[in-house]
Image 1 (cartoon, helix red, strand yellow):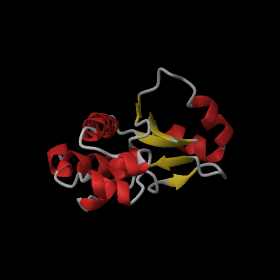
Image 2 (tube, rainbow, N blue to C red):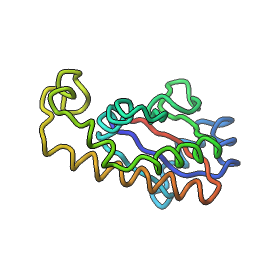
Image 3 (cartoon, rainbow, N blue to C red):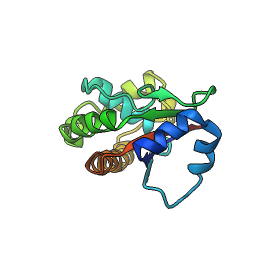
Image 4 (cartoon, rainbow, N blue to C red):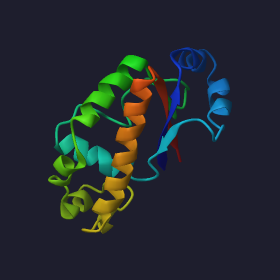
Length: 149
């Protein structure tokens, strides 16, 4: 199960809500600005929750399709997310990294296998997430969150 974000214009987001099939086809364009979190999304979310950062990379947004694999993030939501993530450097999140606790809670993808080295995986993907939202917000962009399994 992977999670990614693709930057779109507010108008493209409106079109995605009106035509989810168009959105799926549109997201196939590999040249669109995006952030592919791979399987790190649940670990990042665990750290965001522990640090009480009001961002949920999986649940936030509004469903675009009936399967709820695509969620739309408005330009105002992108801007608020950029602000929250920018105010939370990874060093803050790293203070909440506890491989034992992640394993006990079966946090995907490592389940019972989280170890001290996995923090680097989360750090790299979090950095990409922050940059994505900062750039999307600076352009006045919206986003589509894509969950694949």
